[in-house]
Image 1 (cartoon, rainbow, N blue to C red):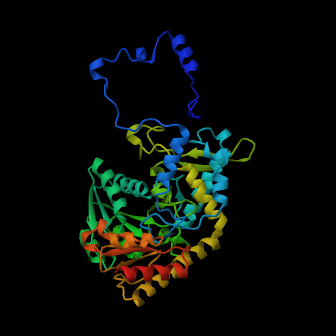
Image 2: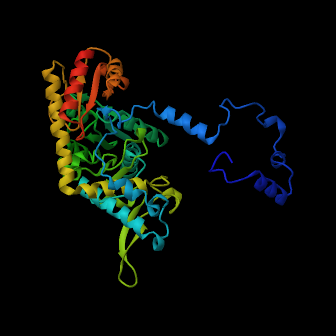
Image 3: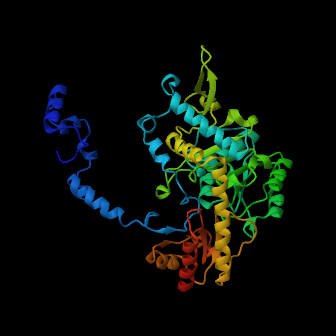
Length: 447
């Protein structure tokens, strides 16, 4: 056999056909009219042996500019953070990586407890009353938050800050289209939400105000003020948060947030070339019966022993379709476990220290760029990322950086023409002073 994962031999195929009483594979499809059958050849390569295929795939993979062999300053939603080695060890155990939805609690206690711990840590970080067992990623979690708000308030308009990640905003807009919900962008000013514009846009049809914390540009928004504006008009206040930043920033739950969503990728989850990752979703008690997905609850059995079960499942597979809050059909249990292990390995002080390093090193980078003559247009408090203005195309600069083994920042001109020649530079705790200095020097030489 040329491929180890194709268990059927020619003899197996012959015996199966004889058993069902047909002479060939083609006879199995005899009921399908010839005129609707595809008669040509697919535009794909000829099949190769396993060894040849593995060699070709390895050569293709070697072309990727990964963060193992390059220094990365690319963020924009996916970050190169420290991942404790124990994370991969735990999630590689067969009890976890083969587990699916734990419908049968009597044989899924380990998985259920792991999810329960994830929910607990997310609730503590966000300052909310409870969190669900995870979502697909940060973008879909935010979109689900918007849909929950519209359903809860029975209103048909969402105000989304222009400083929210553009891809997250696109996902919200896509979800909203199917529900006939209007999505209105709140203008930004100096890299943060324009408060006066928000006041002007608020009305009695606004279901929620949606902001990001820290925002897409790395700036810190005034959550307390925006939450008050939303609540004054009886709307909900939704925050898309970076969970690592919450190690040092005031949790959104303490600043009036009704829903906090986000992506747990900074904790123990590799970049994975953009995914899969793990979304989280936390709410106040008043909204707990409208949370999408599922929650794990702690209880006791008939003998008084602690146990865990799925509870408050509000999707259409569990309750009447017209009463379902979401059709989300799974969660990211394995990656939620990775985040849980990552947070546990760091501990409360470790999370705080890691977050502080992101602040200190980003501040160092900002000062270094300004000292080198670059313009950093957005001042004020920031976390993890800064915007740097360049004299030429960011794409061209990044090509030059890659030749030096450096993955440059995100080209903001790709999502906003007005931000052409502006790079979003991410500086995590993994970056050293020497690496930051090298980035500034190389960008200066490529200007």
